[in-house]
Amino acid sequence: MEIRPLEELRAVDDLSLAFHPSGLGGRMRPEDATEFQQRQIADCDLAEGVAAGTRDSFERLRTVFAYGVLCYDVYTMVSDQALLIYEQALRDRFMEWCSGTTSFLGRAFRPSRDGAAVAAE
Image 1 (cartoon, rainbow, N blue to C red):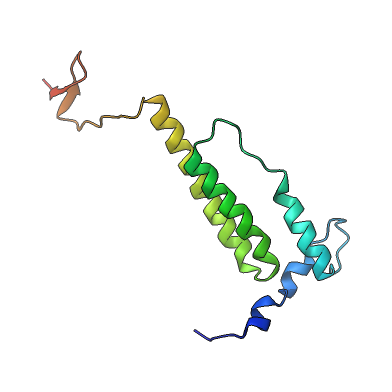
Image 2 (spheres, rainbow, N blue to C red):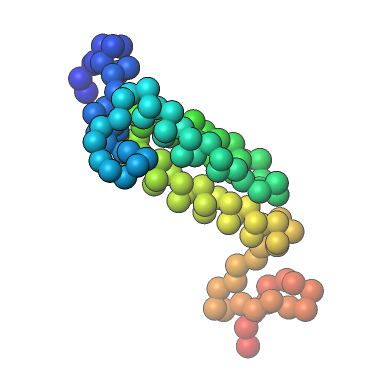
């Protein structure tokens, strides 16, 4: 890994300046690109019932998204991570629906009337 100076790490990635809200093309000024990208996700709020862990993960992702102006590759990482957060939300809801517990049975077992696993006939 190449160790880069702080000034280089603070420099705007030129690829990030290509996003333009007008759709007409051209490059944005770094200040405008920074504001534009933050506004893209500023009003993306989660529903009240979203679990705290998922909410925390989403907020971290929203924070990191703003740094895409400095490193264009961050947008790809955020996109990939967003899918994992979506899965986390589904997992949270599934466990809530199951009252916090699930049973997985192999083909050799079936659930009994009281919920215990018994050998299949």
